[in-house]
Length: 200
Image (cartoon, rainbow, N blue to C red; front, side, top):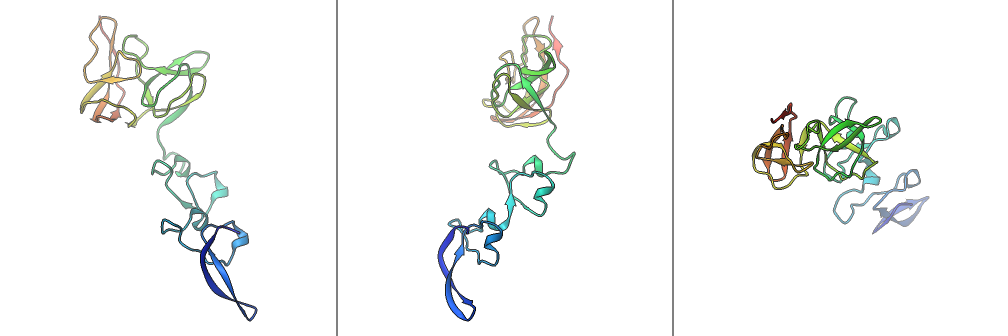
């Protein structure tokens, strides 16, 4: 049985009146025909409304969609082709949430921090979660990087500080100038990759 409420109801049990508690949560089929009760938040528990925050495929048919811990619909709930433009790529160094990253060849595709001090390390995307070297990083190729700090609204460029953006384009010989989007606030950059220019 699921979690019982302190509230009870009278039930006709083969001609006898008996008390039965309402349920705050459901344990599944064993709780068929029980009366649900609102939980401490004044809403029905997810186990009662049969909701999920992620989908495992056809086995979750008929479930109610619930927002995940970030307050969004998980990409596994979306139809094929309707999701963020991402790829899972092995990190060749530790990455921090919000880093702009470069995809390079090293016995297969790998991802590292983009760096305006070196030609060939232009930004191809960004990550929203920290990743340890050797682990899989989810690389976003478009959209809003909301894991940045210290930005000023306006155009932003790849910085000479690896993985970061700056409002001032690098100017030293050998640096690359790559506009990577537009800062919407101190903590948000709309990413748009442009071709890098190597300075002489």
